[in-house]
Length: 158
Image (cartoon, rainbow, N blue to C red; front, side, top):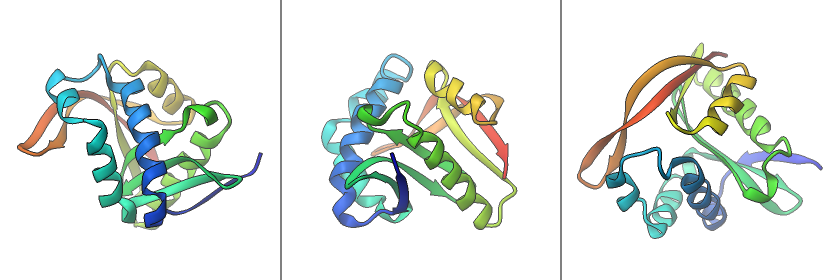
């Protein structure tokens, strides 16, 4: 299986939204405040994916978008892989690309937030050389401002 990464284009928005919606539910339901779950409607992922194409890099297997990552400055904001491609190396490829982008933006350290209860993601980041920098409340953006979400800050020198 060959995985290629490239900058997302507007035509990728539907695939990104579908992967994001499914993956967000898997990693966040039961681990984030119910107020956040209530505003993360299916439709909201389609709107957010379209709005964030400029920050998005996709992983492609064959002709299918298998996952994506969003990087802004030194933060790796989103890392998601479709259920069909989990365990196939796509996530590692995306994370390596995110680390490369953070370094290219002139930063020596990358960081990301993981919902405290998302044990699967936390294990993945730790296996990938990221260190748990401790608990904090991530300010999730919602229409009315931000909502604090219990997370762990993971960091890695790049």
